Length: 129
Image 1: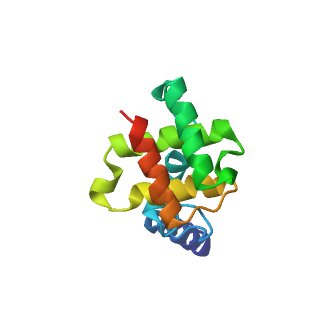
Image 2: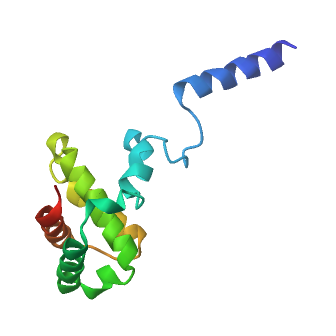
């Protein structure tokens, strides 16, 4: 009986100090809990006007035509990036907006270089208000 109680206390203690599965998305990475919101492509679609949308897609196509293969996702990534900008994501960590751009597009299947990410952020800044 003592062994079972000790095992239970040990398991409870491990849970309290976060000794869970190291493959867990939150293990060892406090920012991992932010990943769904960072990668979200469910931002508010009314944040971009039709003319701005067309210009944005044209600008991204000039950066790399592969960026606009899925235009809806591309627009949502842009809107999510706009929200990052408006929320001041770079204030605490310079380059964070570009990093999030890269993560969003990588999830969509496109490799985005740091310089391309900077160009995408500049394209978003044109219409982000």
